[in-house]
Image (cartoon, rainbow, N blue to C red):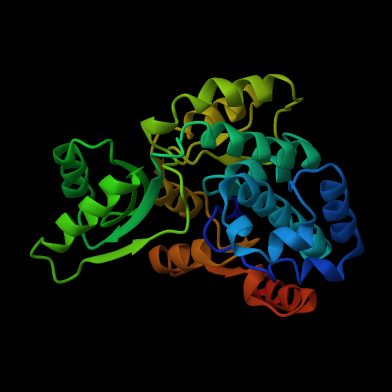
Length: 315
């Protein structure tokens, strides 16, 4: 039975102070400094963190988020129980594979940067893209809505039976939002995400061979810990399958609700999200209330994380 799991977030919740906890750990600080020296952030780390336009730009955000999650893990590693399962949301799947031992940490951050650039190549300057979170609409109805739009809008991520993220050309997303607002639905919720690329849709298809070429230059191993595939919640160990999962999720829907159900079915009773943000914790808590889950981002100190984990493991 898998009792303890790590959750690795994607884009959307990054902020200027997201490395504050990791800064208290010498190994985490050394890792971040190494990433900076190798140019993985495209600029000095402090500049990236304190410039919102950079912090949410895809090419900087993806390597920053992977590095932040890995640094937070480094900071709390000594206080963790045995890790039974790892799951990553979007770019977080790269982080998850690194934590599971499938690749080195420097390779994961480098891959995140190359992944971001590959995805940006699918987005023309005169044709911006966008993502829209939709709640209160059944997935089947939302899928049919996308088909009726005839505008390359697609289901990018499914997080519940009535919650999903749509992605596509920015102009089409605006039209879709207006059309959804016109529906007779009192429970509708809409929120534009601070992500400016149509991740996990066919618009990213041209990024696949670019990422495959990057992966071919890197060393991947069978993982030491099972990793859930974002596409469907399957458990993966084998290096070739892990790489294929990363390639497939670029242009195909992520079924995060299936990943959360897989955590539950595996017997997970305690989970820790590595940050930045706490979105994965909130979603898992709402879907499977018996699983004790928090994010590193919710604590003021490493000791706070350690004390919470000790209480959960002791129960």
